[in-house]
Length: 62
Image 1 (cartoon, rainbow, N blue to C red):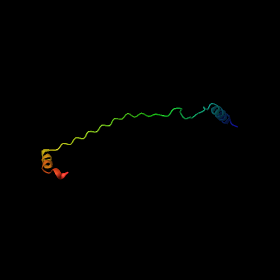
Image 2: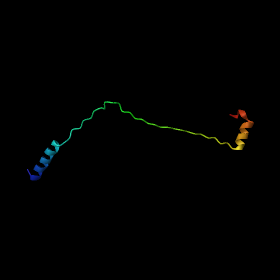
Image 3: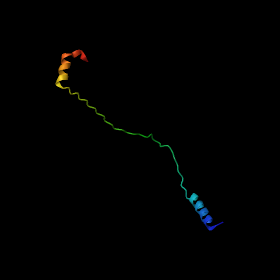
Image 4: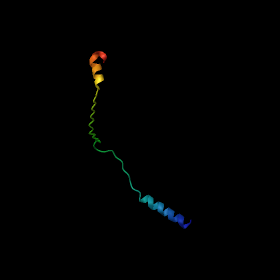
């Protein structure tokens, strides 16, 4: 074998020995997501004088 092959084999052997362990487990308590959302909607109708008078003259139009 060539010297570079020995070095590569040594790095692989050492690299696999230094690998960490990963543990995944479920939490003991349930996950809580608090969303404090305040939605305010304001609708303003502004009618000009012609529309107001038309509605007053014809109350059954709506």
